Length: 230
Image 1 (spheres, rainbow, N blue to C red):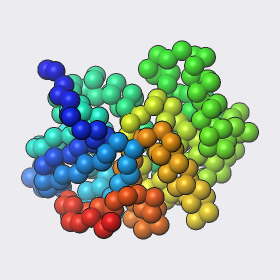
Image 2: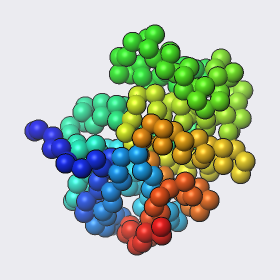
Image 3: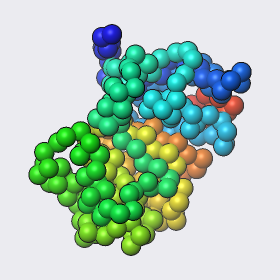
Image 4: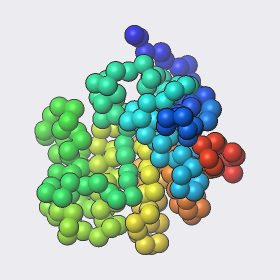
């Protein structure tokens, strides 16, 4: 089935999204749009549906009604192989628990997603080193995760998230494991990278300070988006 393109420059468009687990509805008629290079925070208590929404956006969870478009491509028309490829090429991820591979160095962790899409090895290494410089971690490129602080790990995770030139970053509580100083540094970097590279960000958080880098703050409760606080 051909993929439909949108005439605007939205990085993400969610329309009328509904998701059930069994007979229990967990997402109810959700709609949101993020323009290219824009940042939106999604706030709400645990169990409000934030993580389920992220899983639907990246194709991990199927949904029952509505549509999700990323960069003009409909996720819900893709087969599993195409979704996997699409995630690698168009999406970047930043997690609370970093998810770096423990046996790889900082440089190798940044390179890893690019190796999965068969880029030139020399090009991958050059890009990875450039990104480590961008996040101030070039002096730690040979260190493995167990030799790095939480703030350093998240900087490396940020570099890894943009190695494949994504148009959208999904950031799930990116400062949740960090002290306030390290958290602020990571947020400033995420904002800078988003602005410089025109990458949209959907940031899930329960912390108002973390949401400060976003143009809009959406609030979720019981599977509904109940307001825009900016």
